[in-house]
Structure formats: structure tokens, C-alpha cells
Image 1 (cartoon, rainbow, N blue to C red):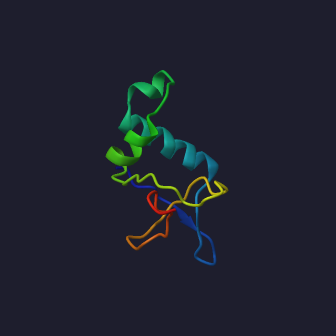
Image 2: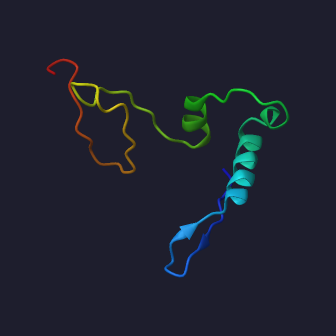
Amino acid sequence: MLELNTCYSMSQVPYITYDALEDYAEKIVGDFAPALVKTPGIINAEEFLEYYLKLTIDYRNICFNRKVLGITAFNDGTVDIISDETG
């Protein structure tokens, strides 16, 4: 995977310019699916996340009333979810 280089503000907060982000996105697409750089098309998000970024996707019910449509967890800890068997 390609490395994203960022700049830092005076308070050491990382940031990236719009042009640099566009360039990085084009390089990522070119690395993952080279044909899509010249001929735009659809990227399979699940394939990109699992095989290119090496992330794990897990589908679960998060709440009863469906007011929460998704969650991203950035740790290997636990996330409370609803049990399909017991509710």
C-alpha cells in the first residue's frame, strides 16, 4: 500500500491539501485497479477494504430501532452489539 505524506500545522496537527489528496487517491486507485485510472468505473468497496487495506468487515445489528446505520471501530477491543438470537 502507498504511504500518505502529510504536513503539520504549527500545533503539530497533520493536514493534507486537496490537490495532494487527489493525487494520493489517484495513485491508490492506480495501484488497486490500474484500468480504472484511464476508464472510470466501479470499485468493489468490500474487496478494496479487505484485500487492499487488509481490514476486516463484520456485519452486525447495532441497535433495535435502526437509527445507527454503521460503526467503524479502530481498535481490537469489543463493541457492544445486539444479539440476533436474544435481541
